[in-house]
Image (cartoon, rainbow, N blue to C red; front, top):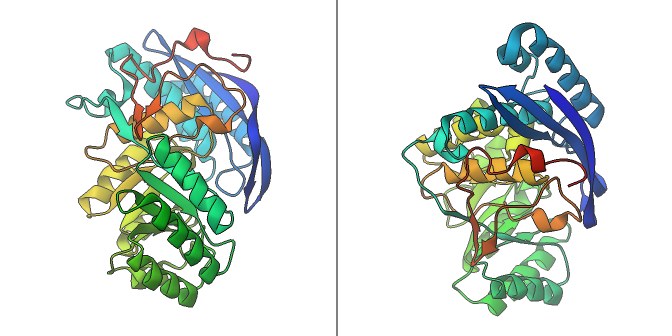
Length: 348
């Protein structure tokens, strides 16, 4: 295993609950397996994964274990619940090499009978006043998106309702609207928002309540507005979330879950329980975005996913082989992730 640090500047600063992010820093992972070189990306995100320091240390420990016991020994050193980004990096490189060796794109390594040319994607509209929010949604629709996710929770419920209503009036009934509260509401606020959102045909709200309030999320279910859990998968074990009957939708971030294999497995488990999976990135480089795209492509009839995030980076690890048009992201049909390892690097 070989790791190389990188730093990717964002095209504009990104405000999060953990602070403002101006760069995405991580580690490029290369691994030779089955006479192929696989590539992966470990890009920690504060508040979601381990720190960059812990990620580096975990990859170094795994690399040492790999020299003694191969990839199995390395994987045993990378626990998804403590160092998910590090595990994602190595697991992606291993899967990329496996798919290359088998001569299939990664999504078909997950499901050999699948063929998928494109995955539907949503646009994300940030927090702004009603007019600016509606303008941003209209621009997204004009670019071909038929699904918009609106950030809510930074303002009062009444203010957010005004923003969502402004968007619905401007984009019409043919566009799906979703909201993402990032756990900002209490139960009373969430109930008020859900009652009003029903009349605005909001598909679902991501993380309306704090991550550990599974019972509260379960109580919100049953109406026309669904409950999607995201941060809860960081706070709680997946088995706990699934057994709580607290979600209509699971938001699956492969970087947070410890790799594309874990995300794919959880997507299928969710489907078995009648819960819809939605795959998203954590504002990653092109390798992790492609890994997430292949996970989504391996799930039949998946809805719009949060994968169209490459434009948030001013520079990337390699040219992006995908395109986004008419609300869909194309899926590379080349072997593995769809990139030539020789064309990938911090200075690409």
